[in-house]
Amino acid sequence: MKRTWKIIVRFAGVFLLAVSIHVLRAAGQGGAPPHPAEPPPQEPQAEEPEAPVLEYDKAIFLNPIPRDQLAFLNQFAGAATKDLVRDKQFRKLMRSVIPNCTFHYGWDMPPSDALDLVLKGSPAPVRIHDGRYVMVPGRGGPYLGGRGFMWIDMQDGIALGGFYFHPVNGEPTPTVNIFSKQVKEEFLQMSQLPPAFYQDLLQWSVESRIPPVTPRYFITGSNKKILLEHDEDYCAAVGGITVAPQPACQQMNADAADIDLDAAYYLEQTHHATNATAYMIRGDDLVAWLQVRDNICRVGPDPLGCRIRMTRQHTHGIIKPHPVPHPPHT
Image (tube, rainbow, N blue to C red):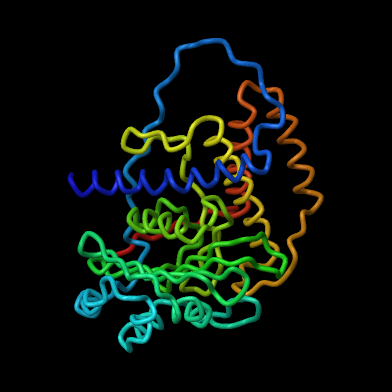
């Protein structure tokens, strides 16, 4: 119970920082609603929805790494990332969990090479918390705003890499790519990943000046790029704390839904290639659907909520058109 409460409190603090950056940016870009609605009549207000404590699906992580192979990481707590990256055991660990595919960071290269570019010179300290979670942050890549990290759970034996940059190959930009050989799913939502990972991802994003709402992908052990869907509710309360006021939080939910829709279309157009270089094309079918959505939602009592629901449903129709029974992991 104490650990759960600690995670909730830390998550709320980091998330507030991320939301503050998003709200300030929106204000600086004229982010206020384009058509201010008249104040609604005073009615009894429902309680803020309480966000559940995130629980991830451990079964999606295959071939966990034995704990004794990760114990060496403890000696690097507080050390510079660049020092850990030079360690032979760590480099072996990276090779074992980063997919063997082609990644397009300016030009084609393995994702391990892209990650190495942003980690090998990073002075940022290695962080270990709760005696098990290791965050190895890299900031300030040589070009295209590249930043990255490695994240390891020494207790459950899972590892995830992450890479952020501004693609110039035509895909939605900027983008966050998460990757791991241990995951081979066809569809993935953020809530399926460890809550401690999400907490550390938010903290890294704030420290690295990365927008809290941005296209997110997951490169799996099947060497396939899939959508990592935003299923967070930015208006939910976390540990009794509302992380963003209305209407800013609902606008963040709408932005996330729109971003996921664009990313889903891009993945479909590029056949989930990990190094796709085609330009995003909004076809006539998508343009027509957006017009229908806007016309329907404009006349309802909750235009933004309607837009979010319709967009998410449409995204699910793209990324999960033919549900396939998923056998349980043993």
